[in-house]
Structure formats: C-alpha cells, structure tokens
Image 1 (cartoon, one colour):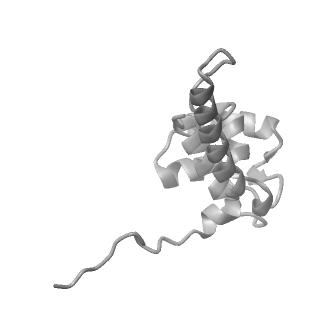
Image 2 (tube, rainbow, N blue to C red; image 1 turned 90 degrees about the vertical axis):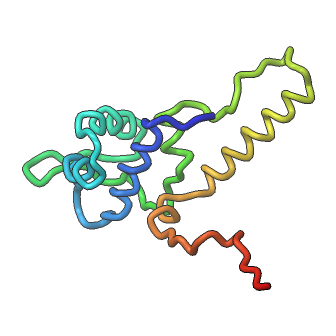
Length: 139
C-alpha cells in the first residue's frame, strides 16, 4: 500500500489542527502557506474529513477548522481510511494461494495496527532522537 498525497497532506492538516487544539479555528490558508501546499487541494481533502466527523468547520471572518475530538482520540488510521480507503497492500481473493493470502493478511493487519495505535497527539509530540540503530565503533 502506498499512501498518496491525499493521505500525507490530510495528516498534515490534522496535525496542524491538533497543534492548535483548544485555541480556536485554523484556516486552510495558513496551513497551505506554512507547508507550501495548494489551498485549493487542502479544501478538497478537508471535505471528506468533515463528512467523516473528524473536523468541524467554523464560519466567519475568524473561521476555519477545528478537530471534532481531542488529538488523543483520533488515530492516523482514522485519517488514512477516510482519505485513502481500506488498508490493504494488495487485492487478494479466496482463490489465492493460502500461504500468500496469509502473508497479505499479516501485512495488512500490521500496517493497520501501527496506524490505529498512532494518535495525532503522538505525531505532534514526536521528538526525533536520531537514528538509534547506529552504533559507534572505535578501533
């Protein structure tokens, strides 16, 4: 499964709204300018997020969008499913080889577990600690 710009930019919108959670509405224009994205494209992405109940729109001069729930209650999986559809690395049928079907199911379930266990609050509080798999060897 390859996440398209819809999913990536949708997460960008949601992370910006999570960062401003409780501070009032955020305009798509400010998000677009900050991340150098098309405001028109973000408008297309926010509509399904609103329809799914993940965001609310606020009208008026100081309007914009807010999260409908706390960032700790919205997962990356919620966002990706709304914008990308079901999570599946490949389309498979019951006629497929059982060993391959089992592999695809395990991959799908692993991806879903990571997305569903990663909340917006986790994404906005993430600190890059560097690549912890690197080892320093002295000779």
